[in-house]
Image 1: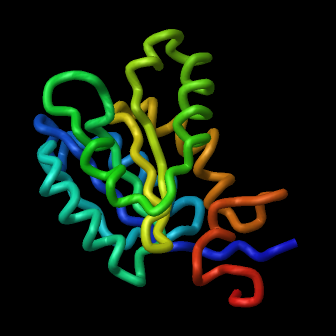
Image 2 (image 1 turned 135 degrees about the vertical axis):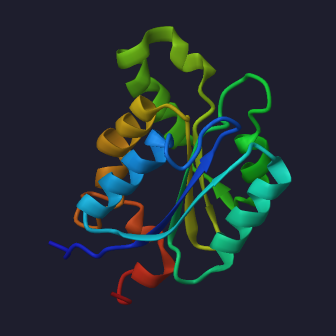
Length: 172
């Protein structure tokens, strides 16, 4: 069995209304990732502006120290929600199954309201990017039901960590 290897994860909250004090979704993600043994590379909170989103996420994608990025917020259908439009063009490959699985799991929790979620994930320059809804419950669901195991190199038969250039077979 492979050893656990911590990865460095950046967390971005996208919201026009939250402040650092009221950002419960970002706080939950930081708590989960650090309790799992991963490293918080950077944390930010910004308004929903697709070009500013692209700028910060592009910087993190280009940073060799950051291996994964988790965003929360801006994935709905209302108002200024633009996280998918902002970040999908940055992906080299989209992980279609992530959004599908997230919505299937969410259906058990919130029923058909999950249709309004545009959660998605992709790989960009060897960096994993996950875009989650802004609710604390959605972040909890995504972490405990998907990300916790997929960001653990010990998870079999496969996991996202194995996709990272630094951890390809023979490199770790």
